[in-house]
Image (cartoon, rainbow, N blue to C red; front, side, top):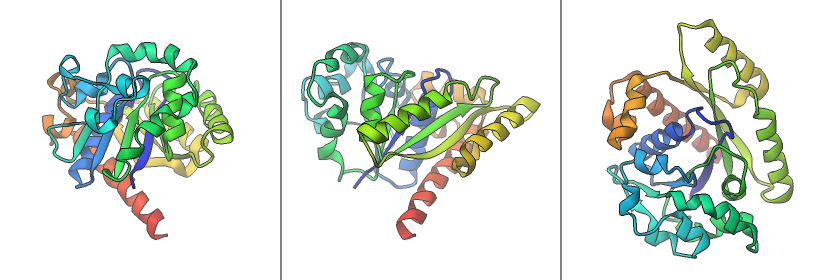
Length: 259
């Protein structure tokens, strides 16, 4: 049975899609069967794993709105155990179309039900908002993983996100839990980065991962080649960091299973 992890933060530019792509890739490279679901109309996670949006017959839009079977939509990536359900710009209209549908917050959960036993992990890259697409991911998820950038306004909006999580738990998904918080865009040369890490640890306590993702030019280059960082430059610091994060996520899950 797949563990469903929603990767969300309504603040843009925090490394959310970068984390979704690279964590999914690194977990798959650890031998796990992984599905990456791109629920962001921008479709950056789709192109980040080397899928041409314009070549896809179907996308997550068809799955949510037209009832196309998820198995038909999932595409194998360059990593054999990593599959992706792509997104295209028409998904932007789904927010409006979902409003009038019955059980609208559960469309994603119901659509992915048939794939639950085919994967070990499902990661969803959410849009930078708290609209219906993000709510669908949170209603389907077992846990929420929050990327936070090591910058001055890092904590801004977090209370709003956590309030949404509380409402989702109350009304849609009582089992939703915070998987963890990953600090991104860390610059060891600045005092500010260390201060922000300290503040976030105060806020989330033991939910903050030990692994911190550094600022990296290579990380910024990789998506333009349609490659996760480990396939683009496995030796760079960011690649090593995402491998470490993947190991941490898997170990945490194994410890919970055995505990």
